[in-house]
Length: 291
Image 1: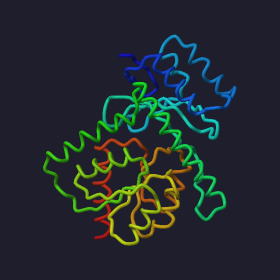
Image 2: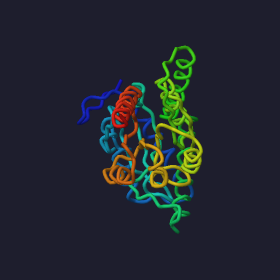
Image 3: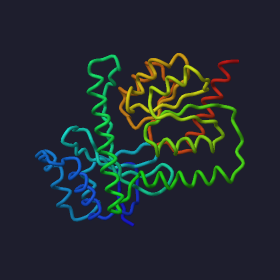
């Protein structure tokens, strides 16, 4: 095992320098297909490819840690979108790490009535496609991915769900998440915690369901295909309690969502035990306020 010392403490992971370089090469080949890699990106990569150890290479990544899940991020962009990042992160549900492509940016969501909406939608669709292509090629080349870790965890959750007696909470949650694997993961976690769950993959379907069905709570991603989570909050925040669950961690986005009417803002990744405690506290406080 290789050891990395960071400001938040010591983290261990099994990653070779060759695997990291291979992941970067695959990323660049797909993200900059038929395009010249910008000089600023080449300059960012030179110290990594000249490194003599994985520790030295990862020192050129931005280190972050949310909810005890350390991650190493490197903004490499693409031929059409400068904010794409290569991320190596520890899963919230295991001790394993995996690579993924972060397509988020600190952005102001465009309302669907805006003339800029079509452009934003094109960017979302493009970055989603690039993310899928790169991560799929990682798996083809036996590079550990966060997506594979999620799928393995989902399989374990399904086994746990079918083999255990679960005490129902009597609460119905609408989960809105556009990533199919993350959607499956959080749905199963919530079901194991005793909640009834219905899921959708975009804001349009979430709004339709809220109009015709009662839910005790909506758990909402922000950056989705179609309308953004912010617009869902604007249009449905008075009809249903909404909790944001997003990888976006900047202060502006959090404050914006809360000002629009979200009841709370949780930053991904969130461990199942922390989600359990948060929801228990949330529903207890809501019951007290109603009484």
